[in-house]
Length: 434
Image 1 (cartoon, rainbow, N blue to C red):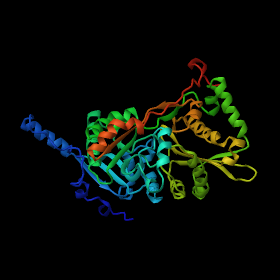
Image 2: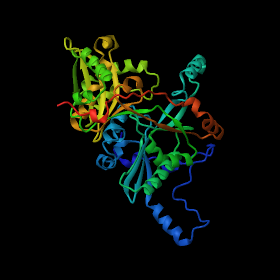
Image 3: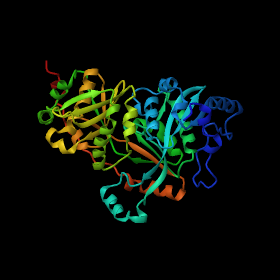
Image 4: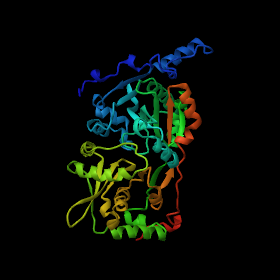
C-alpha cells in the first residue's frame, strides 16, 4: 500500500451517482439560491461556502498522523489514526473511504466509511428473526442481506464514525455537517446507506442533514456508561457507594475470582491468537453481531498507544481464561470486547470479574466515564450504569424501498427494552470509607 496521497485519492468523477441511481443525492452545500437574495448577499454566501473543500481517500496512511489526531481527540478512539491503521492492516476495514472536510485549508471534519453486507434483520425482534431463519435456507440463505455503504465504528463503542471540530460555533458545525453528509451521500458503494451510532447530542448535529437527504432515523441498541463520582479514589470507594444487595453481588463475584491472576497489559500482541479464541467463544453466543474481529486485529491494536488488554489467568497453569479489550481516553475508558473460556467461567465468574479492572482504573486515574457497550443490560444494570438511546440513519437509493423503510423501520429496528436499578445509596450516604 503506497504512502503517496495522490495515488489513493478517489477520483472526483467517481463520486457522482450513476444515471441508474433512483434516489437523488443532496444538493451541494456550495449551491446558492438566486431567487430572493440580492447580489451582494449572493457573493458573500458564495465566498463563505467556497472556504469548504472535501476529498475522499482510500487509506488512512495517506493522511499525516499529527494532523489527523490534532482534530480527533483521544475520547474518539474509533477515529484515531493508529486505531484506523490497525483496522486497515488487519483487514477489519473493508474497502474503507476516508472523507474529510477542510475549512480554509484546515482539517475540520472527518468521516470513515466502509462497504459491508448488512442483514436488515440484525436488530429485529427475536420472533421475526426466528421466522426469517426458517426461510433462510439453501438459495435463500442470504435473504435480507444488502450491500451497504456504512458509516459506523469498525470497533463498536457507542460512537458515530463522523467527527467535526468542537472549536467551531454551532452554526458552522451545522454547515460542515451538511457538507460532510452531502459528500458521503454522493459516494458509490451500494444502494443501502447506514450511519450509526448517534446519541441524542450527535443526532442534533447530523440528524437534520441526514434527514434532508432522505435518511430515516431508527432505533439502534442502547448504549451504557458508568459515571465515576469524584470521590471514588479506587474500586473500594465505588463498591462502598452501592446499596447492600448490589455491593454483595460484587463481593460474591470477587470471591469466586479471587484465585484469578488479573492484570492490565499494554503489550499483548503475542496473545493475539489466544485472545481471539476467547473472544470467538463470546461471539458465538451474541444475539447481535456488528463486526467480527480477527487475530490480526488483536495483534495490530496492541501497538496502539491507548490500547490495553485485561487478562485473567489460572494461577496454577498460567492458562488464559479471559480477556477484555480497553481503549483509554482523556475523559472516558472504552470497554470494548470480552473473551471468556466458558468451561471455567462458572468456577471463577470470569466474565463479571473482567469488567471490574476498567472501573478500578477509571477511579484511580480520575477518568469520569467508563463506556460499557450495548449488550448484557441485565448484568450492567447492577453495576450502576446509565442507559441512553442510540440511533441509526438508513436510506435506500430506490424510492419505493426507501418509502418502505420509512414506514416499517420499527419492525426491523425496534426499541430494545432495558432495565435500570437504584444501585447507589442516596448522595449524602455516598461518602467513601475512610
